[in-house]
Length: 275
Ligand code: NAP
Image (cartoon, rainbow, N blue to C red; front, top):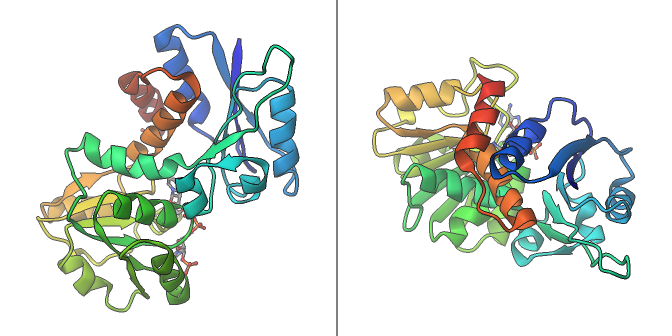
């Protein structure tokens, strides 16, 4: 049996086990997905331990996405983003040695594949990404690499400027001119946690939303945020955060197994737990 897993702290409410196991079941793979909660300073040791135990792949979540960089060979995109959320530990060799773990950032593919699933092509789009944390970094790189022009808007303007400096052709600012930025945009990604703790809150006033916009909200609890409701009312195309969560998992599944992931089965398992 192949074992895959998640390291994070906490991981108690993760939706990844049912999502991935639905994929294994659908394809008839003899595999299981388990969660691990290492101590805050033990990320690199946890990766080594998983490799020694023959675990085939790990997802990585808060607070370890940066910490594991030293324990893996990061692929170029993960290195540019500065965070790893998927580690391929590979099979051990006949001699019992495992190859050096390879690190990926599938949150970026989560954004572009969620958009593609809704027939949204970021190429040539004017995109506004709100947020400059982990999700914001992944979204900004993903969209720039898909040939969108990216503006990063963040509560702490300095972090927006810093991220914009790393991303090709991107600009950055605080939130002061957010409404006019969104009014002129084709694509909006909320990569802040606004709307999660307080579901009545939204990062963008409804008046700024419009029918030519596609809005992807990274928040997935609740699945229908106030931002997405306002966007739908304005006639915008909406993509909820569960699609991003699904496709980051689909991408990891495909890296690990080499198989085409059964998207519908994984989506059904995820949405069962969210709705
Ligand atoms: P993070 O690294 O902690 O970043 C949080 C971001 O939110 C920062 O840019 C922060 O701005 C901003 N923020 C927080 N509270 C705010 C407020 N009241 N007003 C304005 N901005 C605020 O977190 P993260 O990992 O990027 O996650 C962000 C959200 O994306 C979370 O809801 C998370 O669940 C979601 N997410 C979803 C997926 C998915 O697959 N759907 C994947 C990853 C994350 P400052 O820099 O000013 O603090």
